[in-house]
Length: 184
Image 1 (cartoon, rainbow, N blue to C red):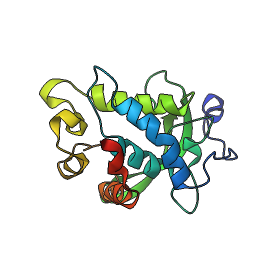
Image 2 (cartoon, rainbow, N blue to C red):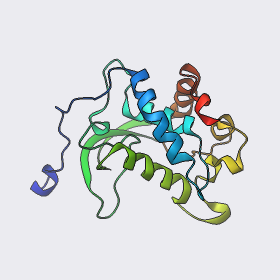
Image 3 (cartoon, rainbow, N blue to C red):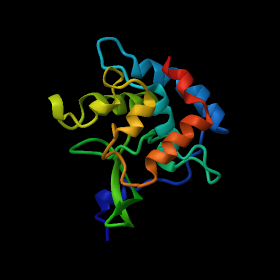
Image 4 (cartoon, rainbow, N blue to C red):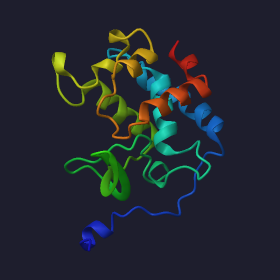
């Protein structure tokens, strides 16, 4: 049984999506992803990777529709979990552990806007877990890779998702929607 303080943070399931299809979503998100991934005096990231992950994590391309977590008022396009005193919403998810999928109730960050969700994701890739040579996501930086395929081939996102099929799905989404056009 959840304490009442946590019950008030349970995800609501009646929020409407603002996107009609994946192409509308790509048209909307691509300028934001380019802006956030190429900020001056910051490590450049791949917009194609950010867009593909947002498509995958939000579920905007699935027949069942966009995830509630990605919709307003939560705006969490990347499945970023909350830490410390960050605003959060509770929802069921699954993690792949010991060769099986396990359902867990997890706290995911709430963002005031989609742009702030993109900013938080870029911050994670640029400054997230660790520093120096051991920095966790340095393999996603354009300065350390020749293209987005190298990020996926060499594990630049290692640890981001527990789903063993995650990187195959991201690669398929990038190819299917020609997302590398946004990396130029």
